[in-house]
Length: 55
Image (cartoon, rainbow, N blue to C red; front, side, top):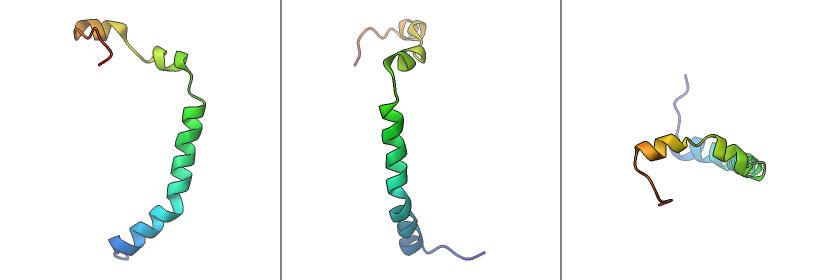
C-alpha cells in the first residue's frame, strides 16, 4: 500500500471535494422544515433534565 503524504495528498483531496461537501450541506438545509426538527425533539427529556429555557 502506498504511503500517504499528508501535506499534498490530503490537501489535494480536500481541495477537490470541499465544494461538493458544502453544496450537499446547503441543499439539506434548504430542504429542512421546522416540523421535521420538532419531530426529533423529545419534550419529556427537557422536562426530566429541568431545561426550561432555550439557552
